[in-house]
Length: 441
Ligand code: NIG
Ligand code: FE
Image (cartoon, rainbow, N blue to C red; front, side, top):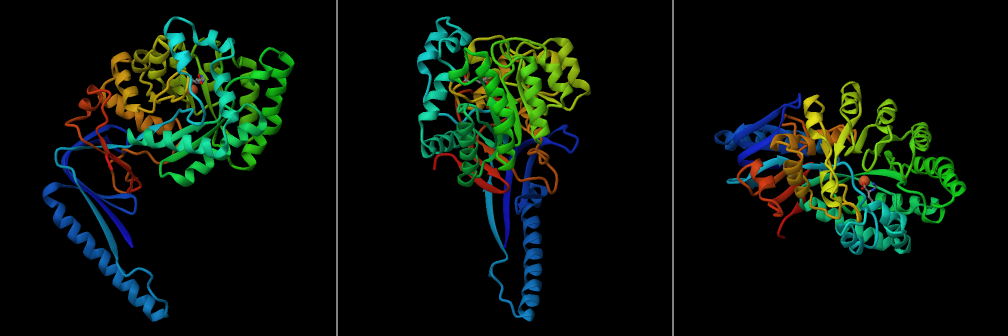
């Protein structure tokens, strides 16, 4: 049975053409079949379009039924198609959002640190005193598989309610061989319970385990365990697409980063890297030289480094809500714009440096603090975010046979979506032609 989804009477749809140029269509209807766009037509041609299409499907179905009957096999379906129509009068339609950087699997919370930080105690100082990532590790290790799965699904639901259809999720709050693999297994399990598409990342190099932090030998042991035990096992069980590392003066240094990333590449992982967040130790060039798929944060990035992206396969991803939440400087979007380098945007949702699932707030912060234009934000949250995850399909290409991944949004325009912040006007999230989130029900 064919599944037809039609978005009719769309006031405005914002998206892109095949060459990733912006495209805005007005008074338009889109008919999708089996998760893909089938036709895009003016509203006045919609009724005729749907009639023709359903007749075609019926005819093909009858032909097949006769063939099947002749072969003596009974037809399973007795209906040739199922149709779902959405009337989008006074609403707009957008491609669904991709969030290419999150730390969604953890237990516990750190509101006590939030107030400390706001009164001037730095993120690094809190970490040095045993708080920060180490605190979340303790809480995460104490939680059962079911608790972690429940918390993860709850956060995924919240994220999708703001329009996210694809999300990258990192491990990194386990930091023993057993705990890191456990987190990756739970991320894998979560995919059975949600229609949001999960892209898992192995991140045992999020920090050094709390029990090894003050001992160089134990730190070296952790690096060796990642290389000898975690990476091969995560690959064998197909638990992650990417390997990620927190490269910083006070976390993993340049040489440790190089060693770990080389081993990850040898094991068949693609690379992502947290780089230039709190300090610049020259690792951005290393990431590009190693052909990293993406590099993220980039607050301390220089113009020379921005130019390096021009001849590279690496996508820069900015996380402006983290800079906002940490009260840090913002990544230099103006330099990326000046040199024609597209950037992705991500939430970085995590319990310490940005505790929210509201990705619309991230986009509003991008417009206020990075001075991004509405269409630049849309591209950064769809097409460029997809590149940062090396996805094959890009939501947002308004062409036949592209994935039917759309948002139905109750606002008058794209600009309004970012302007009226803190609200959630996303009514429906449709992925591959299926509703994955419906607001208010
Ligand atoms: O992206 N940088 C490392 N990881 C997170 C923070 C994690 C935490 O504080 O728990 C980040 O900012
Ligand atoms: Fe992060």
